[in-house]
Amino acid sequence: MTTGELVKQLSSRLGITQVEAKKIIQAFFSEISQHLAKDKNIILRDFGTFGCKQVSAQRRFMPGKNCQYDIPEHKRTFFRTAKKLKAQLNTPSSE
Amino acid sequence: MTNAVYKNALLTGMAERHSMPLSHVKAAVKEVLVIVKDGLLRDGSVRIHNFGTFRLKRIAEHQGRNPQTGETITIKAQNRVVFRPDKALRELIEPNKAKATPVVENTGAIKNVIADESLENKTERQPTAITQATPEITTISRPEIARKAIEAAQLNTEQGSVNEEDKQNVKPRNKIYALGAMAAVVVALLLVMLQNDKELIKQPAFDTQTITANETQSAPAVTVIPVALAEESVMTIEAVKEHNDLTEESIAIAETDKEYTVIETSPSTGTSASIATPLTQPNELHEVPFFSERIHQIMRGDSLWRLAENSYDEPLLWTYIYQANRNSIKNPDNLHINDELILPTLEGGPDELTERDRYYIAEGYYLAHLYYEATDNADSFYALLEAKRYSAKLVEEKMSSLNLTRLERVLLKR
Image (cartoon, rainbow over all chains, first blue to last red; front, side, top):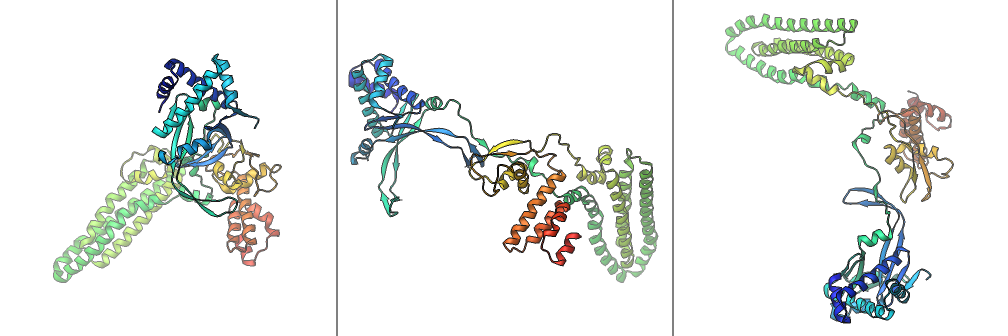
């Protein structure tokens, strides 16, 4: 599924135009992005949590390059699935 | 959680910013989340432009452990949601993300370090030229001589009279050739001596001349041998041997005195070229220091030994780093992550070590010796010999504190 399909489904479900639906979707995800950039954790109940982790500098072996690399400290975005969503995705019908 | 943002706060902010009714936004977002869930179930992935991709990942059944009790549990197969942020989102979160850099690029230049002086000298005066030059005569002629001598012996028993004639014919010719070769070599030697005296280094043409002359004269000497008797052949072998020795001498003299000029001026013809080429390794000048000073932040897995190996290509130079950071390092075996170390400049090119460098390497060997001795390792004395090889001064300094046998003392002083 891509954004386009999401827009179509939303417009059909709410009875709004696709332009409006797209605007809402873009606004919603950009809002999450803005908060992530400010190092906030975004908690959407029954869906999941978006957040950022600080990863310290490491030295790692890169098998492709066949040599060690110094990886500087950086941020890693994560998404933790809510229990309810996880349960919904793991119902027997879904398998 | 102070830095947590819940759905309500998020949506009110969003409604205000885009001037939309809050109730409308809430209803829409609720639907969006449901659609995303349905999309995950249907397609296994939902990609949202400028945000990221949610993907459903199937985890197979596997064994896990209860972290509190340690007992093994079977974890059932399940679907997990994996979120990968888009490039746009990643850049928004971390605009100036530094790239990963390779630790050390092991180029060929660094690997060519020759720390051993004696070895360096060996490579410079490697007698490859001689070993390459002589087989041309010896390997070809000797088996031939033996074979032909047997043939000659057979001929002798079968056709005595004919062979005697041949012998009479060949004998003087053979001698003449041998004498001629000798004379040519003597002349060549004289020429070499003369030129050495006059220091006419820029005229190495004689070198090629002598060698080619030797070749032309030695060739018939070999071809004549076949018909000669066994005794004669032995004599000629000796003659050829002498002749070889002489040529070796002349080549050796030419090498030691004017190896570079020969290479530069002589045309690449005949054996002289093959002799000259292995010696063409002029020392490159290294104006830039081998390693220029920089500050290193200690990372996980770092050790002074490894740092020295990475930066100077010689792990035994770790004492060099240790000396430079004497104030910050209390115990060289115990470095602290995120501390900063100064990696001092290493002077000189890769193929030359300064007196100070040698001293530090020797110190490393000396410490290794102490370690081996403490752990009752039989190799402890060899470490000391190595230390002496790099710096006799250090061993002399430490001599009084060393606990050595008489034999070891003698070996060290030698």
